[in-house]
Image (cartoon, rainbow, N blue to C red; front, side, top):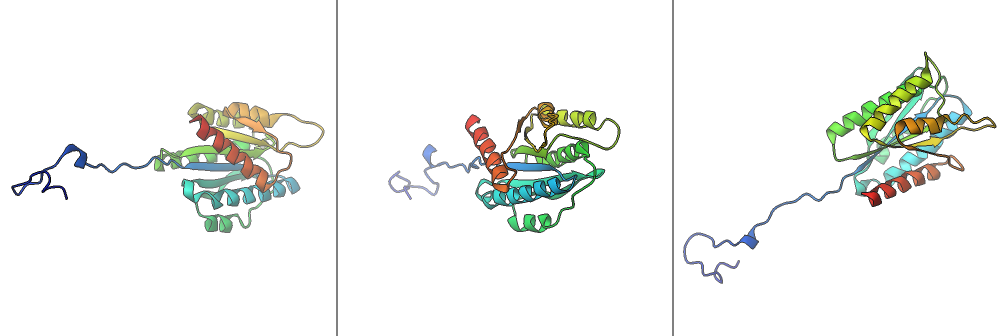
Length: 217
């Protein structure tokens, strides 16, 4: 639009440096919150699952603007399952979380290894996405030879890769073994005990951790 003022007289355009433009992608890396939840036991497991389901849906409701994803791995019996592949869809999560089985032994190592695989795949898909693993457990592990030692070795994989993690300690009763704190140490993360294991308390914890990470960055 400034060609006449610039004295253009021939067919070519008179171009200056400040005419040049370059498309630049705005850096808005999203988060991936992956819950890893002990679904063994009975009443306590149902309480854990109910609280985590509510927390997942709560986090997804405000995840869209931040490009966040939330996923869920559960472990019980002799194996671990990806109950909710990482998603930003509230509807998809609601369907997948409607009915989740509980009960049986506590294959903690299997849960951690399955979570490690989920994060590996997501890292390949989107290397800029920041992962946060939230393990909801009392730290106990049963089934197979040396289940606690196996869980420790699996946990150290995350520490070696620098994956941010939080262990929500669900241990109850008069005798406390402190296994959740031990697990957090192996992960290179922190262990927290919530006054009540509710959806809003878990979701609030995750938001606090994410807020602290953003301020540190």
